[in-house]
Length: 210
Image (cartoon, rainbow, N blue to C red; front, side):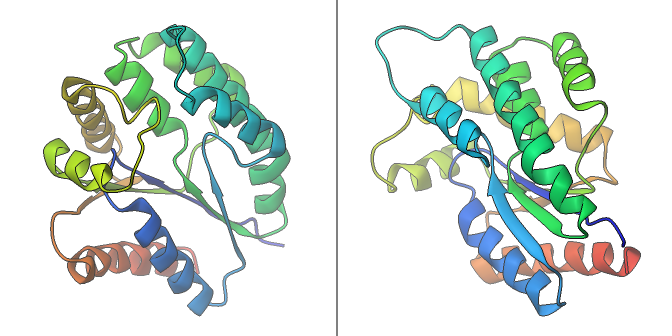
């Protein structure tokens, strides 16, 4: 049996991940691909409990290193209990965020630097990476304006604009370093324009892996 493929969706707040994940799922299903959808932090019962801890607003400030370690704790469980077993069964996995988010949010946003993150990723995941990452890119002000309309903000969404600018810079620097894996989609246009870009990426990836 062929192993499945692992696709991730990344981006800052308000870029339209949910809408476009639905489009990607439908597109892959149209190719008769057995696809499962998951998310980070989360994806497993333990991971979802850690997600609640991470997103909850609290009086106690959360140390950036604590945040990072919780993210990787959830990720280890996610990979070992859900993602890798699915891939080994030949399923394709579509995840809303993965390790790139930690590099962008904690490495760049929290300014923890990349050396520790690289060490942590190497130790906990052993070099496991997505086969394809689609990064939806928007100017931060536009994304935050869209996110405002969703209702009450979680702990991350409540950060200052400079934090999100560092996060976006982080994502773009990863894309520049790994252009074959991470594809940047201009999310400023209409849904149709954005999804036309995504479809082009999916067609190329599908044809290369058929």
